[in-house]
Length: 202
Image 1 (cartoon, rainbow, N blue to C red):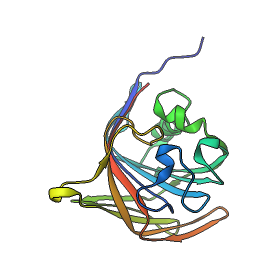
Image 2 (image 1 turned 90 degrees about the vertical axis):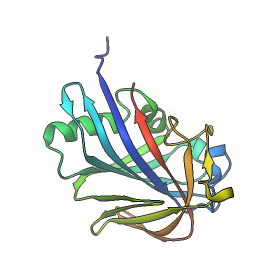
Image 3 (image 1 turned 60 degrees about the vertical axis):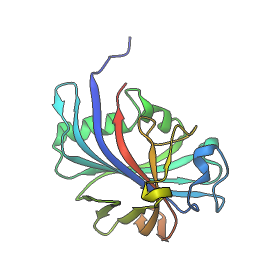
Image 4 (image 1 turned 120 degrees about the horizontal axis):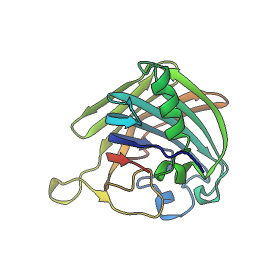
């Protein structure tokens, strides 16, 4: 029988990609440019994996989908906060690798190849309607919410494909998005972004 683990993560996240705003992939429609070049950043406010605390840590994921995202064959690279100790790194790799269930296991079921897992310095910022992440020499992304009617945030709730099913996603647009690692070299701006709080658990 598979070992059961007690875990939960809570915090905030954002994503950006090369699709037009709002990204059609969440509705199981084809990517705007035929493929999807996605980067996801999470800041964990509170969390644990069994008795291992996971507070105040960042995680990043680069993802390339060569075609329709629902068809899978994603290539991904996982980035872990260098402030995490060895036990925390192993716990995050297990959780974000989809090995202990929950929504992350659903997302990882689309993955065809894991290019690598790296421990890196990461700076995650949340400032009003802006979200940003910097991984020196690898990635830099900044998005800003799009204003809806009456000055309220524009949101999407419960699409069939999403990074975070637990909360409505605020629709945003990228101000900057660069990624250079493995075989990829992306420079993108004025394209799709989403952000929201998140909760992950089995």
